[in-house]
Length: 345
Image: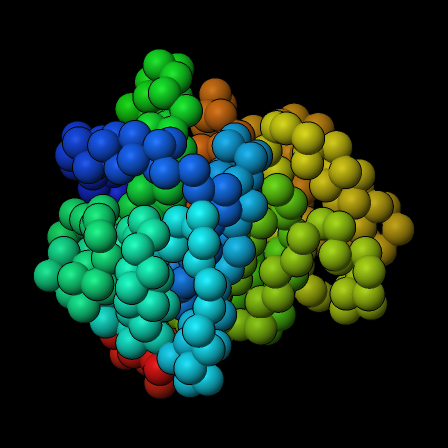
């Protein structure tokens, strides 16, 4: 199965995951509500770390939970005895074998608090270390670049949020995600055309804010690992605190904009980049006021709630990285210097 096959498989993978996940997530959410937790710590690496960034927004905005990204080496290398009082500690890893992530979960488990593993291997060391496991159930992911396991990780956090909230509308919105993923795949010809125009580009900037910041981070990683492009992701707020100096002719800017509180400021920044600096913009959005700014408009399917948007938006990024890699004459099935499973300590 090729990387493109795995990208195109995501609607079916999402439907399969959602059909089974709530049976695990809902009892776990009930326990969390009774446990009195008031914050969350997430240990992850690479692509999974971007899913953790998404969780910061989902669990923070929707449930008032402060979410910290764990620094696994504090435990695995330095042997610190971190205190996890009143914390839910989550480990995220598609393979479940990263020793430093496992070490954080083991430390939290010894303290008796709730622990959760999110992994594509329910028999992995990470799953065995945690109290509860959400199996991504994505099937074998043979491509080195993670795609379907990433969207499944996002879905796992979204399902946890829906279970914690207990709202019927949230469950309906989740159930609609596979159909929206199917619709966004229709953008592939437009994305392929854009990629051909950008084949000679060696650098890219990506800008988003709020929920979609995770998308900017993951999109940039895919461009790096597949296309060997120096792709730098920024919050629309952070970009104005110095990285604005990176802008120069020949460096395209990709903006990811969803409806919600982050949209006006992000659109204002993109407008400024075009009018004041002549930036060539690609914009992934369902908003006309954002798309009109773009040389390369990428119209996302309408109607997805902001909190579920990154599950859909990243598919555009995956397709872009795939086709830009091909346009640059690079084999997307054999990323340079990389292996499928990376275990760090």
